[in-house]
Image (cartoon, rainbow, N blue to C red; front, side):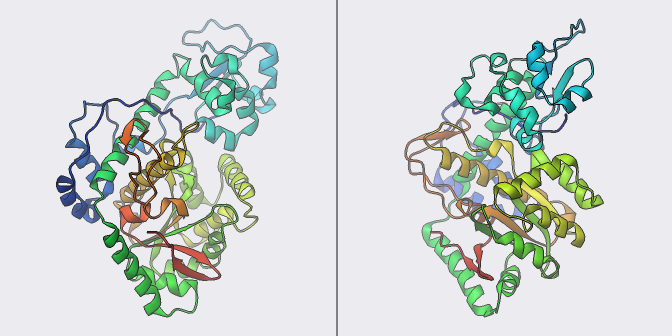
Length: 415
């Protein structure tokens, strides 16, 4: 089985001092021209923190090459570079029959991260996740994803993959810290921006949600649509109105529900061909089921986008995942995801194919200023202070954040 994505939180690697507000202020003016990701890197270069191995922007947003986990069956092997992860006969038999049949000399290489494996091959994920003895130091209570990661880290042939995942994590932490330093809007500034959105909606006097959206797109390059993931009605709106949305100037849908480093290549292939890979099919079916979306969910939205030639890009990724067993989990996820998503959009907007407007599908928690952590914490090693809030994706991109309900769009009540 093949595919891509992974990582693990790192401890702080040096106390990076915050950029002074007076030094960061000029950076905010550059954001609309060069993008938040570029501004973040400029601010980061001005820090006095120790030198840290960096990854490129492309590397941060792509799943590293190579296998993430390898195991082999009980068949004797004398080949060089073989994995030490040898299964007993009983353990080998727990692997799915299809996996065993497809193996060569009882060797199984997994190219995706544990979360993607769980979504695309749950049987293999369960089998590997039960092999706790091959993951030294990983407690059973940590869960199957952690066990599978531990197996990969213990294998000299795959540890390099996880080192690259660690580097992605560290870079996102640095970028999140730099993004926060570069963001200097005051509450009054945000209220002024929110009022402009309110005025646009009120002035349009539109009769329905499509009219609301058209009015917003006439004033803004993009619109963030926030809400709950479970049973979200926005999917039905997108499916029904895809042609009208395109006519309003939208060329791209940016979706939190798709991890770009896990599925973007398969989404692109589907949009180009109309044929969905088995892995993507399994993922979207599982997503729609878990989120109680029925036949008007992610799968149907992708089908409508394919029919109308709409671009679809994922804006979530493994480095932005929610950390486990942390007292500040929600803040860490918000800071990481908001940074990663705003970078993903800014990067994609450089592509000539992205010309036109865009819509974003996000959880409401990723819009507006997220409340700061209840204690000092870190995001992949980068320090954040107690009560230090983090700007939403809409704040970082300078676009309105709205919610969809009863065939109307209204501004999300963010401070």
